[in-house]
Length: 149
Image (cartoon, helix red, strand yellow):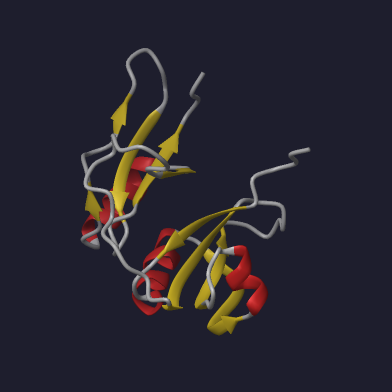
C-alpha cells in the first residue's frame, strides 16, 4: 500500500555544477554520497551490470518525511542524453515546488541569470500563480504559489 512520495530523481551531468544551483533555490543536503557509491545491489535494482554514482538528497525542511530531490551523477555508466526539448513530451516533464513570495523569488533568481520560460502567470479566476525555469542540465522546475482547486 502506498504511503507517500519519497523522492524525485534528477540525473545531472555535473553534480558540482548542479548542487549549488539547487542550494541557491533553498534546498539543503540531507544525505551526501557525493564521494561515490557503487554496489551490486544498486546496479541490479537499476537493471545494470555495474553502476557507480555520486549524488545528494535534498530537502526544503527538517522533516524526514518531506519529499526529497535526489541529484544523481552517473559515473559508470556516464550520464548521457539531452533534456526534453519541450513540455508536451510523454513521461515526467517537470518538478513542481510550492513556494512563498513567488514574485520575489522570481526576481531574485532572474537577477542571478536563472533561465525562466516566462514571467510568473496567474490562472484566471484563481490565486494560483506559477512559473517554470530550467536547471543547469535543462530539467524543468515549476514554482507554484496559491491554491489549485
